[in-house]
Image 1 (tube, one colour):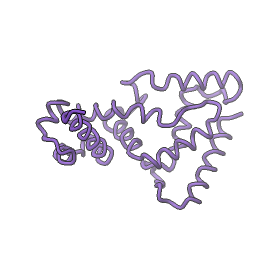
Image 2 (cartoon, rainbow, N blue to C red):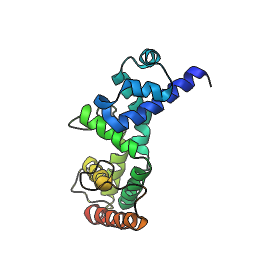
Image 3 (tube, rainbow, N blue to C red):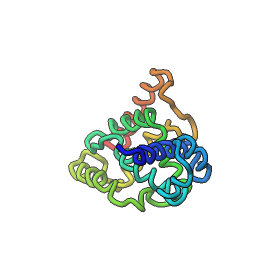
Amino acid sequence: MRDGQRSKERLLEAATAEFAAHGIAGARVDRIAAAAGVNKAQMYGWFGSKDGLFDAVLAGQLHRIVDIVPFTADDLPGYAVALYDSYLREPELVRLASWYRLERVPSGTLLAAHPGHADPKHEAIRAAQAAGRIVDDIPPDEVYALVIAMAGTWSPISATFAATAGDDPAGHERRRAALRGVVRRALVP
């Protein structure tokens, strides 16, 4: 791999950490460049601006943000628990999505500028609803939103309690069981 490509990858890695920690407005280009060992002029040459760098970070992480956990409409409780676990393993993904929501897309569909990412999940939910495996009085996109919201109850951006990977394992098991049960009772007939 060429040095320029390695430098660009280091820059994107440093920018991911910086944006996850501080958001777009709070991120500092100086810190990103220093952490990556890249000069600011090169960064601007590659990405044009701090906003352009954030766009590149989001584009690079979008697949992981949306598909970090394989989706199955046949096990929404299991999917919610797997999301909970993914938030413990990779809290920066939750933070990036949250900053994107706060600073770029304050209302409506989070991924409006990136269409198509949730469509297969919505279609799978629609099919499961037609087969009687998921309640059918809630639209598929709202079923999906509810599962994500419930899974994020203890995420790094929770307003009430943010769980971390270092928490007591018994606490994680208790939260997983609660999450599994609530999603099942709410969405599975």
